[in-house]
Length: 162
Length: 297
Image (tube, rainbow over all chains, first blue to last red; front, side):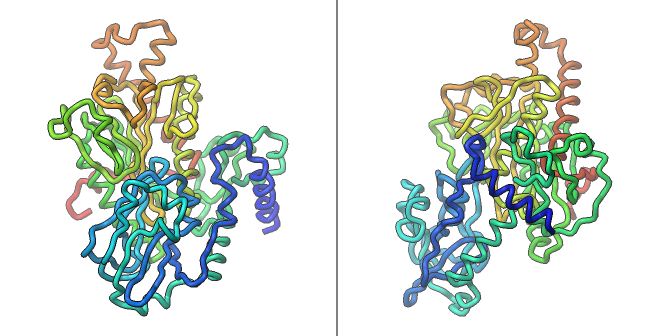
């Protein structure tokens, strides 16, 4: 255990002088924003529930890890999403990643701006970078998601472990 | 990346981080590490828990793209089920060559095709991987790792750099070719020629698709595309570069080279597997390819 703690602090020290290691993920992951009032999934999507509609996107932590998003693949309006199941994909660094829906429901609106400006996900992950709006079919699913404090701690633990 | 050795502080830190064993969630037993011979000799590599990787090795076979794609997707679905019940005990690696084919990634642009997409000169597949158009064909070794990044590092950038590192080590240690990365251009380069292309898909931290290394590939099909969307650089192969460094023209005696091509592929294959195991700290467990081909797989 002591060795691991030593190694961890050494790694942090080395990362701080990572000018010669351009391929590390940016340090800004430690300071990603997490908004109050949203709910979060452990796959790094957020949900904003307002009345009968829930807006879904990926978090600042997620976009920061991905790097520059070059492409977003979103479903059509009228389709449905299921909790913890993929509904689309984002491409960055020649890697395309699934986006999973935190809740189940019917897709009532899709952010069409993302096809021309996928970078909105990076610059404004909680506002202009929203992905889909869903009519929740099972609002109780929201209760099993994390709040802001819990999600912040989750990110810290996940980053510390890697 | 963490190296739990006091000696690391006195080394020039390599651009490639050596993976640590912190954050491991799998309590895999310490298996025999005969494949990881360099761990004993390299003080920068900590003896870690070695994860098992089932290997379907068809490196001399030329497989249709659609078949290999279907195998990958099937394995990914099975692995996701195992992940959900916390029983994902092994990674997977498929090694093979493809029949001539062009493949596109999720964001691929038609502008990078020098032919009509509706009338391609070779089979053309729109896939779910990242990256632009590329060519696959005989003489090119494909590595399709299906890796659970929860047992490595949950960082796509890291994973791409790791795949590049495998090839960089193969090219330098086995072929004495000075290979490098180019910032912003994923892949492995020798000079301004790309020898290995990379494009992956990630789903719940499970990766698939992978990398393609030109060993003795006929490079002419690349002229019908703008490979990976990069206009001002070319594509190369190990064979071509070795010939150049030996002062031979790239087109001399092609028909006499089949034996040499076979040997190059053999050597490259062996080196790829060795470096793959080293970079990802895996132990390969070779599986019968009939498992992939049987209907009830």
